[in-house]
Length: 549
Image (cartoon, rainbow, N blue to C red; front, top):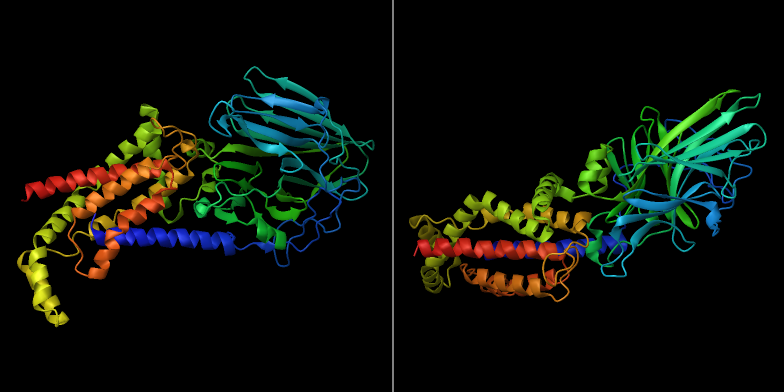
């Protein structure tokens, strides 16, 4: 790789890092789509999403005065009594359903641990801690005359498992006036997707007006890794609604509630590696998705259109909840567009095939470090012809370097004449001064796409390589890989012709040191890719130099 290209990449890295740090400090991620502004007040004494669509917005409207008379206070009253919790467990997750309030109040990932080592425990993602609230809640909104279940309601529970391993937790509550509410949580044996079924039965003699809602409630979660690189993907309230990715920072929602009308999609909270998303089953009805703040928690949810329930009739609403890791193949297999929670940026079209190739190699090698090495070799083979042209051009330029220096001395006081003579020299020797740069520049998008892949892939989390590298998703604890990478860049730089400009030459001489400094905190997997790529480039360039001597 020639020095101009290295300078371009270095400046790109500096710009990328500074830009991300600037955004993180002063401009938290904004919505990628226009949204309607919620014009209603959120009742501080109720759990129900008292939502009204902004002026001029189409779709179902929840009347601003609709509220539940018996709605619980905004504070969370989580019981510590084990008898008021119904546990569940499949092959991937375990957790609890809270009978007081009928909430999904606990969920842990059995195959994803909070740390490495003997003290590691499953990541507790859904929490019932007063300091770290993260809950899933669903129910109905109606007029004040109808008594509804609240967060203080104690539901009756039963549990069953069918022959296929499907677990179902049934909750029942009757309001004493002829209206029965049922809630069922269903868990497949090998899935992060659970289904919540809400049902209301009208046994009164008068019609009922109802609205169904479902939402996640969460106190603000800090991005993983307290540095600028943690902003490589959005973390916070987000959704993918009617084909558009929607994001809102916690700060924005605190300032102003947001709503959006959509027929299909999902909404929830996204972290770097994990996602909680709600996906309504009814994809034909226009629904309101809301992103708001009900202290102490933020809410991301959906409210349906008005339902008039006649005497003797019932209403059933099914909602899928995905609570799990952002494993690309798992998300894609569900065919719910959940993979759009991962944003690979401008080079998304390159990142997706890179992920697939990386997972393909790991499937057979069972080591992501080796998979990265084989992926690097594959990329090198694909770009072999371009790299050959680049190195041949650079080798020719290096042979002409003594003559170029003579021209610079001869025409030191006549820059125009010097440039003319240099171009004549290149033409006579059939050398393109840009030939060593352009083929390598084409490869830069691949590097940035791979950077996103290695940084955002939960598959890399806590995956070891060899010896001291226990986790490819974090930096080398002893900084051996970055130092080796710096040495390889220094060797490679010495194989390239020196820039004609003295200032540029001085800057280029510091590039290996600059890159080493940047790579000290980069994920080990990314540093491994760059190191292997440099070693292969040195070998290829060395072969061309030897062949053309």
